[in-house]
Length: 302
Image 1 (cartoon, rainbow, N blue to C red):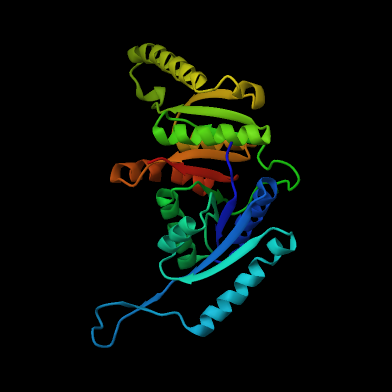
Image 2: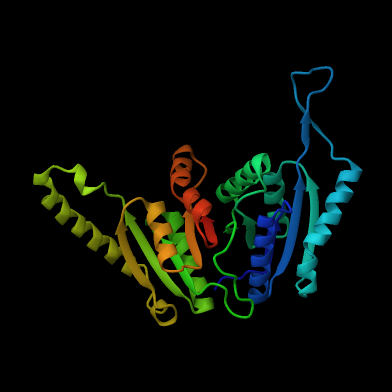
């Protein structure tokens, strides 16, 4: 069973950060967790007079820190009114290393953050921070979309329909462990999905379509059997797991299924930091995180 004792919620004070805080509070009530809200003021890079072609970080001024701390207090007002133990932290520096270091100090069991920033440069900045945290965080990261299709209930388990895409890699199997635990805790419906990446039949010669069609049926059968073997016997009693095998582009199939079946949470594994893994991450998980209408829980293995 997953234990979520401390939730870390980074904020840039945007409406997307408010969405993330709302979800953090729902989870904190359900898991009886504490919430820590951290705001990182990026240091501005300015060229020194002696070497105008070299940039150096400029320390954050007292006035700016006081203004940010006041805004941080307003941001967590709702959390403190709800009775949830809430800690506020104000730091300056590079947001990703600061957040990761504070995650270890707490230590945090979950990071909850919005998927986009305000607009223009700010939006790109938070988008970059989010993506780096997804790849580098050793704890699960729950990314909240710009606007949820429905508000999460505060008095019952927030996620009743969970989707876990599985490509049988170590990260996806680790994500599946979390998905089963969440489904048991919430008495939720869990769907295991495997996506076979096939090209369209129209690209095949006429004399090859029948042969390829039979081969696809074999692959789909094998994938379905592999998924069924991943379901523990006791899980069939508490979450009524469903196994789905589809063909197409993984991110698109995941998003379409989530939308069609009103999925409330997608749980995905994130590959590590290597160049090849970043390509895989960028082409699949990143698309899901950016476009999903429901929260996405990403878990890195290794």
